[in-house]
Length: 563
Image (cartoon, rainbow, N blue to C red):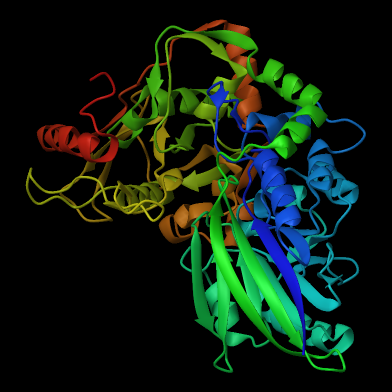
């Protein structure tokens, strides 16, 4: 009996971490594509058989590096594609944040990669065929390995339509059933890998889409032998039972290339070369600090690019006359959120503005502000939308937001915030729900009564200038593209609008992302004084003040940002 070995190394959700350097904080960091290169090159030498390197998407967004290569210092070729080619990727899948960069960027990236970027359920509107390659067949050690790729169908509900124009996103389970049958019949693979930019489960589920579809798909669609997945940033390795009772390994190494998934396959063949069975050994490998000659090789090859990003990130653009701390945003009106709100109002000329925290815990000190600081202040490349909402819809929207954020307290000793152990680190406490859905509003004055249930928490007193707030009146409201396309369900479940009605309410969309306008504003003003506007507050204030002191310690290990 003959045996053949194939080794698979899988990364996902690298999010701009190409070098082991944190450009946002000007310090060396963990993980990165550079360390992936170091690990893969090392393993190729150590292991027998062939090695396949696979990526799970969301590689083009997240750090000053990706922003620079996408929008500032883009040349005739996409630099990230050159890096992927240098490392030696064999196949990848498109992620929602890759698509968020827009056709001009992601089409260039896909074209410049020397390997296929998959997306079977992202369909070209004109041809009815997949916009990206649906699958690829890799022959290694004589073994035919098919990889079929899928991306989360939530894209149209998070990202402006003009960004992904010409593409429709189909249900993953339906697409998987179609393409597994096609690949099995036409390619006769020995082994089929499902490559998902979609989480295991949970996430947003609506009648229109399921954000995280791995468990549902594997348990309902027969034909996968291994599933590699990402998107939810949750390191995980578990088996899911297929319709025929097979145990299918599903593995996610987590984000930022701190770790990789490594799967060692051994195929047993009969005398005619047909695969009789395969054995699998899978592990999650931490590579956050690996350093060898291959790491040096990567760094030298992209030395000029590293220097270009560093110069961009360290450029001074203005001066803050006071510091801001994101943790203040969880406990009331804050300088951090209110700075974003005032900017959004100034750019959009809207009546009202909605904004939420985008980092769990970050701050910008008083003093000089550099480009890198804006990546701590604002995480995503969201464009700014302006929509029409009635006063009733605004109140219901805020009711859902604060219900996602705060507990219903019955005494001063009750929990204030909705907290639970972090999935990635169960020994630490975090928020039960996503912080980027904790929207507050500027342009009105209101209170949030933490003793009340959803539907009764919000009392809107007036417009910010003292004029009456009229529930039946329509107001123009500035918000992120993610929110305006239904992300977080605050407009749908909260305000009660359908996706079609949301689209009809759009008044304006900015041509550039919100971070770009922040940079312009700070450069224009020179000296900026961020400060809390105190236009809204939690009540009873004495309950919340006592709870804040308790829960800051639980969340951040200290009672206030200054202690």
